[in-house]
Amino acid sequence: ARAGDPVAVASFRRAARALAAGIAATATLVEVDIAVIGGGVGNAGDVLFTPLREALADYATLSFVRRLTVVPAQMGTDAGLVGAAAAALIRGPGLVRL
Image 1 (spheres, helix red, strand yellow):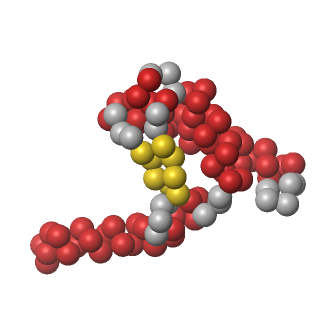
Image 2: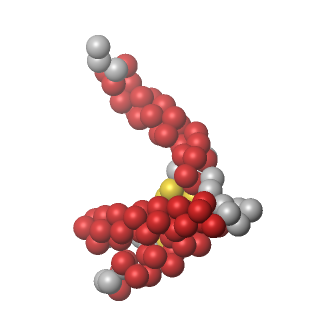
């Protein structure tokens, strides 16, 4: 997609619209100020975030959702792993049950 392949660009645009619909719906329900995209998807860069922000403008109908910020996770693909480790530290040894 970064190289301009039309099929890949179209795929990212479709994915961005679907993601924008989900983000807008969630933001409407829980009134968040920021949506953080993590994992490998967060590493897509402008090829995803530009059409995502454009599509979000179409789906965001309420004023507070229009102010929503969408950013990639600062920890990239490690965000989920770091979050799980933090939860384990906070909850202690009772977190893991077999």
